[in-house]
Image (cartoon, rainbow, N blue to C red; front, side, top):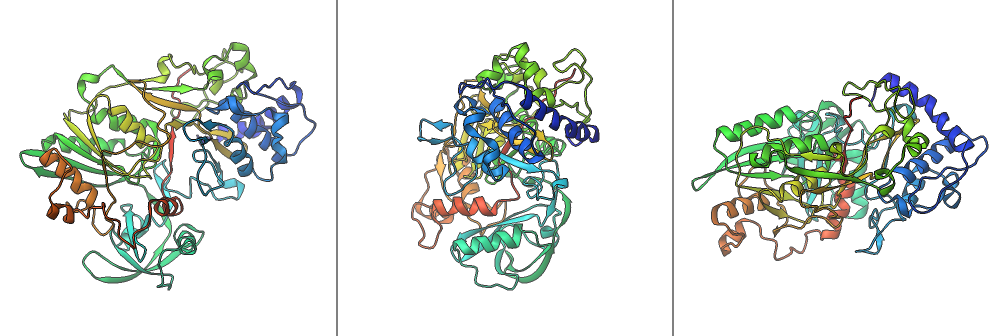
Length: 532
């Protein structure tokens, strides 16, 4: 959505939204009905805060819990972020007694965020991470503690600056910018965050690679194409062929490459597949749909894959409400990023998000299986962690009713909701707007998807190493039909039933991941493709 005409139009419509809020009588009630407010002249910043409230009040999946404009007073918040955080803490998950968007230890929402455009002078949240649009401008790697005294590279994007300097998964970092004391602590995590994900253009590293060689390099940030396919392989397990795919992000540039990988699996006679999503926080729903169709049985063609559910107000919106909706100021672009003329639509000029059908029974909101390729699988193993979120969880949940699924690792992040971006002047607003449920009506996994075999990963091993704990358990099950191991095999798999004294706790791992997983994005982005 980076069309120049779109940007110019939005500059004008920002003030149109301000006029709408100036002229309309406040008719809001705390029942999910969007609100507007009487106001006098306002600054650009105040209009932005008004718009954040108004769009959230109308679009937010849990909008029924939000207060009126007068009660909330959006202009009293000092920053857009503090306003958004406040908006996301009203809706309570009855199973936990806390907000759906409560994130322990953080004063930011679990799901919602604001992405500033480059013209704003602020760092874009999404641009700081590996761009789900297929390019990034960073070092191209991330790190994690294997133990409190053992800092490892957990992944490296192919052809990234880090990859060019020889970093690979499993390398042990011994010095960063001359600092050799890298033992885990909260202050050390802050140091790592600044060194690897901060504003500096380069970072000096000393590391020991998997051959035991010590190397010192300077990694300089630069632009590269993101290839989220980090590793593929085919293993012979008895008489079976088992494919392995490490997939790190649902970017919008990877569909052709995925089809090529699956075609190779077909050629090699793969009948079981291991999909490693341990660091995959999501991305585009369209890419998730592709990988689901590549893996699903052909017999499911035409059956429901998943359904998208919007809030009650949007599902039952009337023609009059559409014309009054703030969505009538959000152009619905075509596949080329161009405005679509639609003089019979809501605003009488061009197609907008107010022209969409948000009903759960509408064909646009029901995705159907349509098999891609000819890979015929009997079972899929998903390797997951607390970083596995959103489009990754959608993929797993959609396939669960139609094929034998085994999950290995740790409970996933828990994000069954997604969004499309809302442009407000110099920012894009992302708030949960819909929830997805599979063909059995199953969704709502806000606490995450649980695993069949719980285990910690081994960061000392390269991708594809059969002795790496999580991959090893998948291959073990393929071989024996069980996760139960002998004592010797358990040792080789780095079994985690006994917690090592210097291993980080699950709470610490989650906190470190939130700080040091900034190349990823936890999101499920759906861009409506309606043609008018």
